Image (cartoon, rainbow, N blue to C red):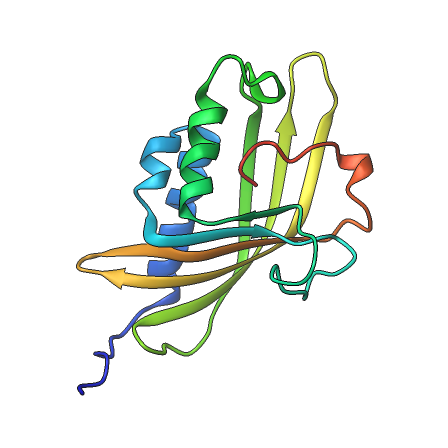
Length: 166
């Protein structure tokens, strides 16, 4: 059995990937964003009181596998999705990108985020926290194996829903 190939990755390369992802999400280019996902990707938003918990034994705000992610994208693009029609206007800021050690062809990445969410006839909401990714190189491109948004908020109630992709 041969070991997975090792590779060299720079923080700048990962930052460019994360900035591109943020741009796609802010522009609501959800089909293009979906192309960044690994065939078995997962997307998690843990409860604000248990950010280190596992989705297997704790209630999460969002715990989507690739099938649910695809369904979420279809739903968000549908005009009958009242929570996001018209779509929220968002602006993401990604900072303090940190890379972990490559293992089995994957790189763990952490980055701080601020997401400003604007709704028509509504208040601006600000979501802050830490993204935790597992990224895998696929040919020339990076793929998101796992995307976790850990919110800083003590409680979600004041922030409203996270019907959009955080």
